[in-house]
Length: 484
Image 1 (tube, one colour):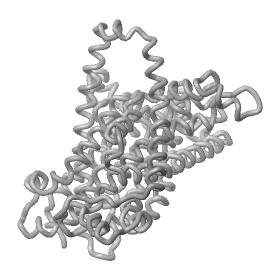
Image 2 (spheres, one colour; image 1 turned 45 degrees about the vertical axis):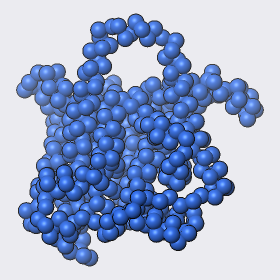
Image 3 (cartoon, rainbow, N blue to C red; image 1 turned 180 degrees about the vertical axis):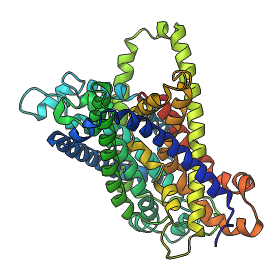
Image 4 (cartoon, rainbow, N blue to C red; image 1 turned 135 degrees about the horizontal axis):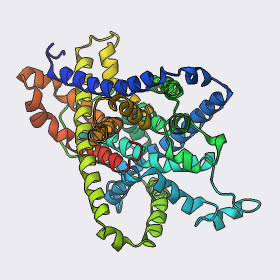
């Protein structure tokens, strides 16, 4: 089963890759040209301090990924097993809020709960030998990262479970399959397919964390590469050192994500059309209680910092702020830029997903992936390890001699936010697209359906909800961004 050699999906994917390469490559070119004037910073970057920073960066990112992804697997399965759980839709909507929160706001919410003078300080002090010291340092970083990434991973795993064909649930129900066999034979294959991508995404978010580490790190002992890059540009203005640190961060992330990818499995869809509505298996009393407990604990953990933030916000004069012209103008600007960023992000993401699938179908069984297929598979994910401040500073330096930088700033904000949100959109859409392609590819080839006709008539029913999820992720990220 091979698509035509002139498959438009591949052309769209090449255009998307070129846009990403131009954005990142142009930024690095601007920094490299500026750093070439004084390359001493690049040589001085390799010292004992860099080794300590790199070690702590990897350690906190790996711990944060484990503490975010492992519970998310359980919570996603619990939500999938109980579609009638009270407030389920509200819980899923609440799980999108952390993405829209600026990191500094979330950090202050975490401090309001677990800090030295937080709401829980009186309770937590009973578990220690003296006064509650607060959560500055590694513990605070981990709590904040889990707050951000547990809801994200849960939603992505839930989307992966949603790609299980309805016929499999129908057959499992007819066979009276229990919870453990259903997990092993139906749910785990879908989760295992999504696991490397989700874990890699969370790892990249944690290794590039900036505001959280700066706010909750508590000192030089908790410095990460992202903070060191910021220091090199903001305080020392040493572009050469910033480029070296960024390349080191990209290299470390590439190694970890490559290892995670090797643990994954190929996406396997079902060639049968779903002829019956999904039937969820009956759950026993013990499983119901356990799943309900998992959902409630996750809800309390995520809602806690947000509730603390809301309580602190109620002390402010909200009415006066709402009447200010500057606030209304900023709200309109944020909504417009985030909408455009989300639209561009979803478009580019779908182009890469479709190109990857077309290249995979064209490849002969048993042959190695081509460089282009590798690029469409992982290219968008690695933009997360390029700090937004590097992209912004690089383009500022590259354009300042040719045009008014501030006039093109909105375009750069939309482009950078769109590209930075692509990994989220891809993880939300790709499982559904691959599953739909597995079912419909032969029929579309036989009938000659391609391009817009295929998207609107064949793929749209399967992709509508995942695309909406990806759009929501991208828009929320753009609304909550401070780095660009």
